[in-house]
Amino acid sequence: MLHEDITGRIIRAFYQVYNTLGYGFLEKVYEKAMAIELARNGLDVIRQKPIDVYYGEERVGEYFADLVVNDMVIIELKAVDLLHPNHTHQLVNYLKATDIEVGLLLNFGEKPEVVRRIFTNDRKRHRSAPHP
Image 1 (cartoon, helix red, strand yellow):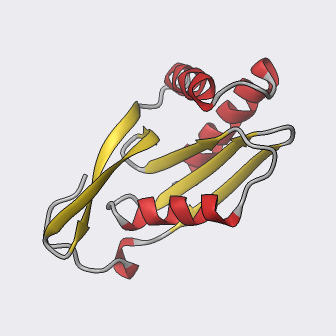
Image 2 (cartoon, helix red, strand yellow):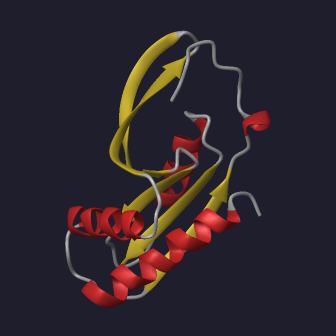
């Protein structure tokens, strides 16, 4: 699997945070805790990394990835009772908008959930503008 070592470390960190904090906090609490735990595990973490979205050559928006790890994995965090398919679509759209190919959707709900998605660069439309 693509970036299996890194995603394995991220998932272990997720369960460490989940087992320590449990569920019921806001996403920002889990974001901060995940950033701390990932850094403790020797990973480079950027919180709220801005990523431009383009339509052709025109910049049409910006979103902020919850966490980007080693410039290789986008992490989208949720703290909801149940993941909705829209959450997964959101993650895939983030992957489409960047050169990052692997994403993890981590839910700190009543039951912890992990969704892994891959969208390889060879499947992405050519982007004329540079992207992070």
